[in-house]
Amino acid sequence: MNFDRFFLIAGPCVIESYSHLKEVATHINQITKKMGVQWVLKSSYDKANRTSIDSYRGPGIGPGISKLVLVGRELGCPITTDFHSVDELAYYGTAVDIVQIPAFLCRQTPILKAAAGTQRPVNVKKGQFIPHWGIPDIVRKLTDSGSGRVLITERGHQFGYNDVVVDFRRRWGDNNWLDVLDVTHTVQHWEESVPLARAGLGVGVNSLFCEVGSTKCDANRSVPLDKFEEFVHGIGIPRD
Image (cartoon, rainbow, N blue to C red; front, side, top):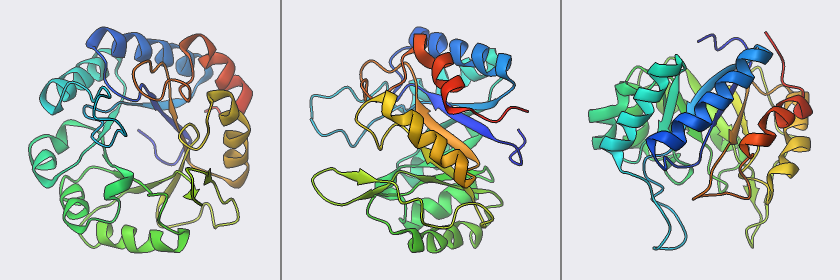
């Protein structure tokens, strides 16, 4: 994968089943190939931070990683997923192409050091409680621990009452990390992500992160499969 070119991180919020993951990934793969866009398949094996205890969390790390790896191999696409502990990274961190750190764990030193130790690129989802001037401290924890490639996913800032706002005044591009913009978790409905994505591309983000085809988690924010091609055309993703 060429990190010097634009790429898309996309997939269902959580792994619902092998067949569902394969269906969503196959569709994304077809559209991105047709448009000449790099992409990475993402999905979570455990949504441990859901609001309700009754929410679907996923198949768990062993079965989840196995499904993700299998689909990635079948389609020939890179894969990524969130890790929640040092132990999970020790056992499964090298199974993925990019290690992701969830927003609530974005400045936990032990897990950042363990992520760097996998020698994989590390994508940190910046917590909505972290100001933009706190990013270099997170990056330094990774680089000082041996990480050679750091991605920071912007998810906005929380101003209270779940009102999340992306501040485009901060410095984008030309950093010691790659800027990724999550265009689905900062909106209430997926159609609102189109102008957000355009704004991100306008300030020079390296990648867009989006939910696609989800049914059991963040369904309203997730781009429906039958709308994905329209979504990609609408935001004007740079082609190779």
